[in-house]
Image (cartoon, rainbow, N blue to C red; front, side):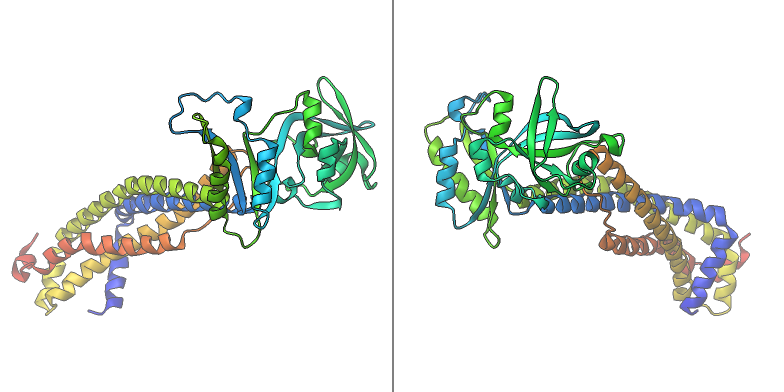
Length: 423
């Protein structure tokens, strides 16, 4: 019997017992759907992390202090901190491969006011290197400079969102803006406006009016506002020049700065690239997805057993039909192929429905996870795992062949005379 006829017979059999066929497929649908959901969520989260970290700068290197292997305390003294002299020496030593050094200090939030108009703001003291390390796009004026930091000037760079709320269509450069905090009021001259990325890092807001954007002021100015000047830093960022091997540079930076900590039994310097962070995140997500996917795949085995069960029932119900066909000259191979094709069709339909279910649940699940991590923390990206879908389709067919072979073989081996006598 030709393959097309077998397929037509399979669909005719499924149509005759729709509910039974659906219940049989249910295990396959749930199994494939679960696996695709987990894989697509993992793939989407990987893509989201990759996009977010890429925007932060894959050439960024985080440098900081961590407890040494022999340390039993986590208390950091002023003498343990990385001093500005150490950082400047490091810059001179690696000047050919370092594009920028970024040090920042977040000092809370406040409200920018101009008359009756206001805009919520997160206050960040920064160095000139912050613009490069955080991919800040200045659309009007300039960013904070090294001179601003050295002189602790009362200048600020505000977002285009805040500029629009406070000054409308008026050019804000050179204008003064007041920053209100709970215990103080500070006045800054606007020297620049940057483009606020609505999907970038930031706090949640109940409405656009309440949205808080960053206001950048010189690092030293932020220290004077707080009323203290640190003796050093526990961490900062450096940016490798384009073309430089960021991982190799990170290792060399850590080795260079650790010379200052040879006699410090408590702390040592680490240097970690964004690419290394991404690798760690991907490895973690892959491990979790593999474990959960393996658990979900157990339902595929259960679904396969269901397919075998229903095919055995089908063989029993169609014993006389099999006897008639064999009496008319049908070969064992033809009978066997007929039932295997039917099992494959059941699994393929279940697999396709499971894939659609998995893609839908994966999209919803990825969106919910990203929202749960905080609006704007990750780029919302949904990645459809094409490879996983192809594997799922292949696996569905394999289940059909594997679990359909025994019933099909049993049907093929029926004695035609005994089959015709079957009641």
